[in-house]
Length: 108
Image (cartoon, rainbow, N blue to C red):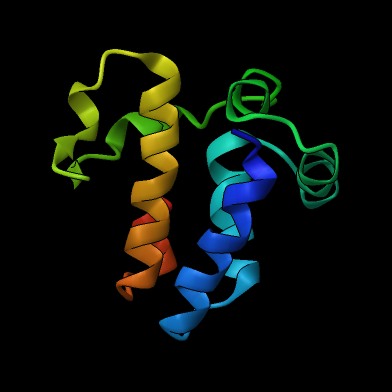
């Protein structure tokens, strides 16, 4: 599935809760190591999730601090690395939509 097909839903989810596209992009860039320009290029190229994460410059070393449930599954226990990375992103977007501070979301 192309990342670009899901990206608008991430943005809609956070904006419905009073958060911004810029905050969502900050989270995505924090997790993947993309900068804003390359993130937009990946969206424009319609890369799938596997390519999106494979080409990510550097998965944030603090990503392992992302814990909790997403869709009833503990993200820290997911064995498939790609699925875990996707769920990390889902979890971060959920935290933003739920009103968590950016400092806590970015595990500072």
